[in-house]
Length: 475
Image (cartoon, rainbow, N blue to C red; front, side, top):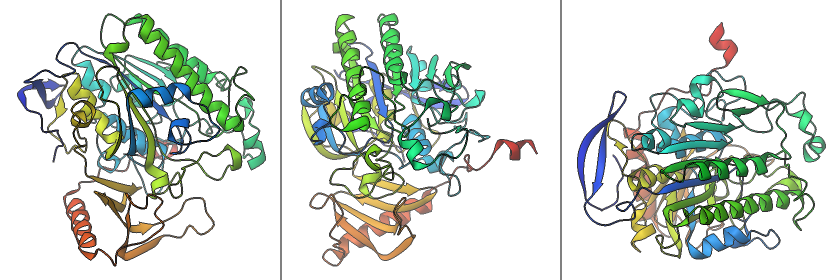
């Protein structure tokens, strides 16, 4: 079932390739009725809920993000599509749970340099949908949806790509000790830096990679000020190994981790200034969030989920609830929004705002968040499905979250546990998931169980795209 807001549209058919779609036209004045807005999605890697100043960190300075949150909207119940890189990014790009596209697996949780597959061409990305309505599109940063040519950003609707094709800790030259990962050297990670389909540097100089991502974004913004653009700026940091440029090294009270966050924030400040200088600030929506929670085993190099439980790799709140900011001066109503939202919703929100097309030939999991962003209404999303691989571990409906299966990722006691009845938490009262309350509200447990059963009975899983390796495919 497709997810839309309550706004009314006139519909007409259009096509992308062989896929039948629906083109929405707004029947009344909205932010997209005057001109097509530019859209910048800034996506961090492994940034925890508690890693920004505006989300409560006591020593990391993020003045630009703090200002965006004050003048825009800070969402405090906003979720990534998954708790690890590849499926999370697939969910953002397609507006579909990654289990539908096969971009999650119970065997290999993310894509690796030896992976044979990537995001299928049958999937429609935000970029591909925006290309049909005249957008210039750029992917800058970490992709992690397939490193082979047919899976790169330029094969999925992006005009331009500059970045690394997978995580910055891959292509290790050998097995590295924890101490070596906490004192990283560029030459230990033979990660390629690419421009479009060509490798231009290997190993990538990760000391300067955040700075270069910012400069690439600024250049694209300046060169395309006469026509609408979409930039997906997916920072490599704060994924281990941590690197910062010389200007930011040893400047944060939070150590190297803080250096990397503060460098990202400073880059955002430069981008904001560029938008002002080029006259594009009032026609540009910016979304800032992260792909999953903090990677906890790396001592002081790990981020923080704040008051939330656990971190990356888990379906506890710390694994998927992310610090999120929407910013568009004069258009987005400033607020702190406690309603549920997800990176899954960026597809419908952005594409509808641009006058683009929402697929009708497939199940979508994307809600248009415009009622909350522009109309002072509640978010249309009232539920969240928490997958680990291809298995549904938990479901949130309203304030309550039911865990059917729990499993930590990096703690010593990380055994899989099934729960019948499910563990239940009231996330409005207890966001840290400390106080199980199923006995108090058995009717809520029954309601969420029925919701989960209905979801699973209607779900059509995609073929696992992560399990295949290049050597297997060649044999």
